[in-house]
Length: 252
Image 1 (cartoon, helix red, strand yellow):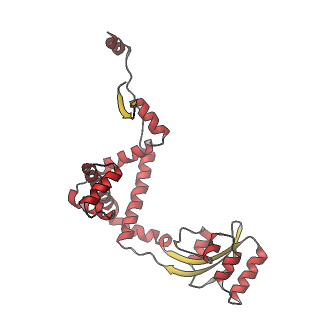
Image 2 (tube, helix red, strand yellow):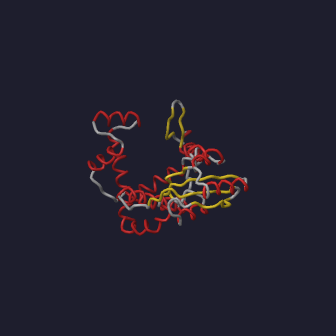
Image 3 (cartoon, helix red, strand yellow):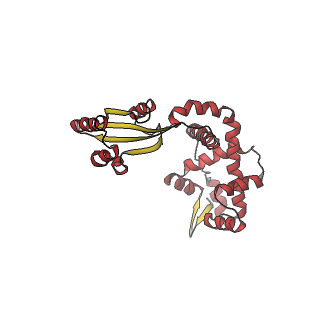
């Protein structure tokens, strides 16, 4: 079988190349990119506009910077343009496929996209947790000081402050507590897994349906669709076999 790829002094035929792709777990990436090509092949775009958007995202504003980017990425200018066009085609495909429904999708996801900043103390000591709660609630003690001294998690390094994070990030129990809290509302010790948690909502920031959010959700829908396609597509390795007759002909 003839070689299809040479790396240094080593050459690989088709069967060896496929074996390497499987070994290095690169075959799913190849399949993914193939699916993207199939989905976007009929999407037309202005090459110049695509390049402007591509360069703008990467802070490339001069010919010298373009050449430097090509050098760093081991790309030719033609390959850079092809990458820009492909990226733009994906964006247009996302917009054409899910754009009309994306605001409704945002409303479905909004409860998880809202952001919170909260203070947290966690300990496995029940009597300590109760004491700390009373000191916070009754004595007006500093949450930051108590968290720094007693909390057993990474939040002790930030005075107990966590965030801002989206509401889907904390533990579901904690997320539900924060979602119904008012700013500065203090919750008594609550069992979450192995921890007793004392928390206080500091700030609630509702998610906004702006351009950045729109692009993020379109990319999220595209990623979910792509993952589904990868799971369902059939992939078989087909290696041509050399017949005995062919071998005899070559020998002759």
